[in-house]
Length: 453
Image (tube, helix red, strand yellow):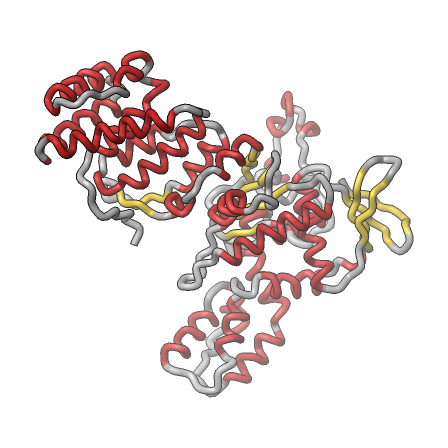
């Protein structure tokens, strides 16, 4: 919450009472640090509450926009133009790229009109940017889909306070509000408090199409440090070739690889650019323990081509299943049909075992795998493919009796005893990973093709 105070030379304090205020605090501290503005993290012994203290008049539109320009320099068209104009000579392609940026959005078209860069009027372009810098920053930031517009109602930027919260999913069209807004049709019951400091929330999120804020708010210092560490991991994982930011990969890979990053229950706020609301991911200690046991997270962060010629990235699905303690059966079965997805299926099965909490499954999986490899050596290739297809289809359609029958037939045909099959007879559902492992291994050894190029 936010309060007016009189303490030394500070007149405002904010507590991280929910994730919105925590994110605003994180964004404010980044803003204050950039502008070299004094602030204070203060613990009230009487209230047993920690606050961020600051002067309200240190928040100005000019300083805010200057911080926007610094923080999002890679996203702002005029900054890209300035970098490109640092050269003394320009090729035709460079001139074309600069002119494309001069008309990249509504405000750029308004500022530059029909003015074009011809390779010789560099200073004129730079002077025009300088003259209109604040307007260009404000309107580009306000309306670019992955900037302010991704988080807040664009009409409420720089507003002092509103009847309804400016954040997407919390905001309302005041002209169209109705009795249905609040609990028991009481519009006054709608919770949508708003403060101008919520304009700093976008600075707390990291990512592009998927962005995250870690609400590690036991203390303000820990809140800031955790998100700083997350930012470092995001920047370290940027694909330099196309500047793609994979914030989900950075978050979960960071949990896996860094013992001191996050090792406790924590709330993570997630914003998908395609949705007009925020989502909450509760990352439990149990899920973190599972993540830390994954020895090759990269395999889930790649794109895979399915039998239907569709490219999918299963990273979100795998992490969501781990967080919600849901087994990966349907993903395993989807890729089980593809002989060249053996390693991916193997890793999915490994995660499945962790989610199920099976402690004594490792040796039994080895047994199922060994049986499959003996079969591969004992029968012709065409028979291997036929049996694998029948087993896969039966598993997908959950005809487990049929699966057991086929396994018995295959055992007789290959003259190999399947020791693991007795567990499937006893309880197929609980031992399904044995069947997955056997079917997945029922293929000739060949060079792995992850279909990620």
